[in-house]
Length: 379
Image 1 (cartoon, helix red, strand yellow):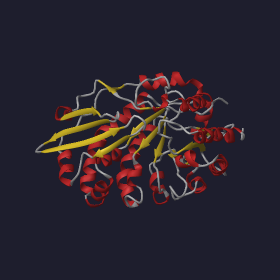
Image 2 (cartoon, rainbow, N blue to C red):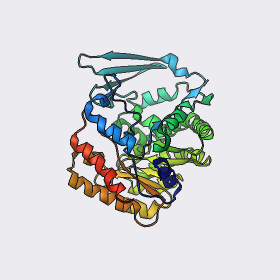
Image 3 (tube, rainbow, N blue to C red):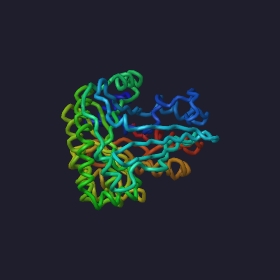
Image 4 (cartoon, rainbow, N blue to C red):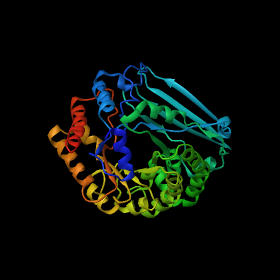
């Protein structure tokens, strides 16, 4: 069974020769050590062995988003300016300014050369008044055709080494990050009217786009991102049902009615929202983080929801980077045991994230290798 066959069988709930092992972001194809971009952390020699290992041995799953050709112009573009500057240390700052009626909305981000992430230093929305001004902005209409060339090209690139996953944010993921977490949670708790106005506004574009992509690319696996913004301790479960289940269910249906597989991505505590996740009809869930990062074991989720969902996880990224091999191996063995125990749709061994510093430690490299060794020993 090659790696592509193993992943496809897992998605379908069919028998496999051994559990699949995905390194999540590190797929061996999208990381280019030769790229001279100063923000490319993978140019450091320490990443080379892991990139090769991911390409040659892991069940690789590159992620792709899908843009639209000939789409109507976004009317907000005329109201928006973006300024970029790079400081003496090489950090890149981007300030976005939007003229929203009588208000001026601004945000600021920073990207450092040695850290593969973007930090938001100033969020666009800072008050209910800002939120209402944003809601009154003109919004783009649905139109155009999905550009599937990137997905098809990635599938040719990966071949039988894996599959390509379509990445899609849900309405909550488009709204919540406009605020700081402190401001977002207050607004989400106290102004559900504004939240639903925003989510419905975003959904008028996200849902038809999702339907069009699923029609053009049937049968693929998708990752739907954003539900964790409504999980405890940020919001109570009843608001998860309102802000996630209500809006993600039509997205899941759009994907799966065309033969695809929708995987919900939600970090952190799951116990009190698992029923709401299952209610979307999704056929996958990641990363099912173990206690104490999460609040349920993989065995618990497998026993109660494994018949519906392929479970992806549940190796904590901090363990991957910090634990010595002996202790990390125990975590991997537990995940392999709990993820495959009893009856269930399927399991993919996977970390919850990946290191994002320029230099990869020898400890992390060895732990990645252990994931493969221990899963391969089950074949």
